[in-house]
Length: 531
Image (tube, rainbow, N blue to C red; front, side, top):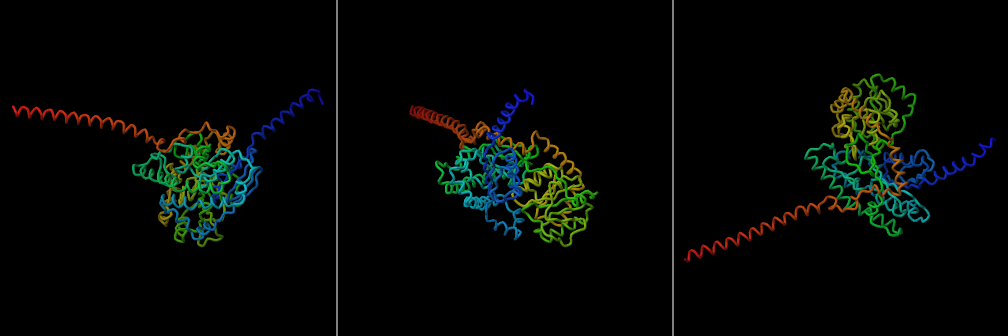
């Protein structure tokens, strides 16, 4: 071996060793707690946490569903939650009735019932062991912005920064976590069906919905979460009120809005939009399915109601309405249907209990997507430039479809309005009017035109928080203000009361002067009469 090479080897070894040590030093231990049993939610948070694990971070996740495939550095702890109530709802076809509920009912029932999963999660031995341990240490805690606030206690226990992940574009109170401005005048609530251009009536109702939601959270939900946190974290010293933990330790909020596509709104530097993070590279289709799509010279319509809603639970009348319309079309139909057979189905209809949705929507022959309007499905459709017909049922689905309608990328059909005429009309409008496909392709180009992929953005900002020990410099002073200070009610009071007091004093002075002048005049008159 040449002398120069021999001399360089120790230096190379030092460089490699230093690089390895740097890698170890930059890795972090990350805790995620996601008690809400929603499969679509798992898809969202697991996308980020898998990405962090791939970067070398050690990730531990507690959730109702575990990953199908093991990932290095990723420990998934499955929660043994009682999901019998969900099963009963599905069995009785109750999920389809949710679309008829008003937003106030949705806010109340969700905040009253859903935290039962929080309670069940606390009762898991694995969670109790983690609370009791004195040996574990985590550098970051990530929780879902959905009935999981009590787990902010872990951020206090481990003296770690906290990140919230919203499974939707954002609840009315999501912005409040970090003091992000969210004017009701042009930021529609996900519980409404409004666009960012609202009439007076819509702005009024939007304000009422959001105010009601915030008040209900502060007066009922937050005290309940605080009570659970204190009950189960009772051995943790110096445990403050849950609101103080959230205010002081929340470093970032991730929302599943789509930059350039979702309604524009004010964004603080620690509110990051990562919509589309779940999107994966397109995979080759199974041979039989690829042939089915390739041979569809007139195009293909893909129909799926997501992972929670069952197409098999549509009524016979609604199913017949679908059949009558499909039988009149030249296009082929793919329908995610949860039963093995479907009586009376048209010849151009193919059913299956599962389809690779993202890969299907990427096929150039797919011209329309009929969906429930869930956040993952609508974003996949927009990413691949496929127009949508939405049949929203609950949650944020109606608002998602309103966004697509506003973009001219889709149409909405209420579940209660499904019949032969309405379904045929909306389908024919979607496939014959070229504006929907044109706009879907335009919006797809906008969505794809980003400096980073949503996953890269999510990973970057998570590591940013780790690098900067909670990134306190991103924190808005709004979180230190009381509600009346934030709304400037004290300033308004001064601006109103001080001038009012001055006017009152002037009026009283004038009154006294008038009274005094009047007395003088009366005295003069009496003197003249006596003379």
